[in-house]
Length: 183
Image 1 (cartoon, rainbow, N blue to C red):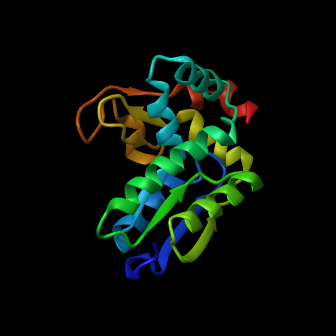
Image 2: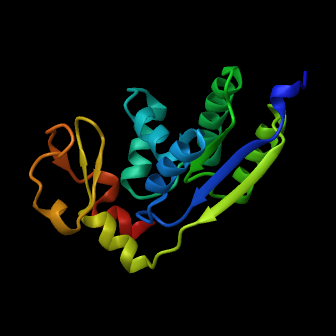
């Protein structure tokens, strides 16, 4: 089933502590190199909204600041990779925040092989101190309407509403001090 379109795909994995800027860098790389995006955290937050056992359990685990089991996150990759495989113009992807564990890295590699993508693999680790991670997360806000993250720096500290859409700003439950400290 291999064909010419299965040639080299740029696969970038961005890892790092919470609040290190993984999402920001992933967005920039996707735009610059016309890559698709997979965000582990985004997928998990979306799945929490489904009112079933798994959705509620994901919410419980994330609000406690813990990691969701590997089998859950690997299910999300497979769904995304299958979708990407159907696209005519697929040059690669940026995976933000995943794989996190050795088992996940092995499964991710198997999945890429399954879809016949020869890999041009790059892994980027964004390193910040635990103190900086805590400070960034404990004050960072998110718009309830459009999802934009608002950092707690400079002029952004003064915002009462989202500067993009006017939505309400909140601190997510998984980013409150108790949850951050438990990671």
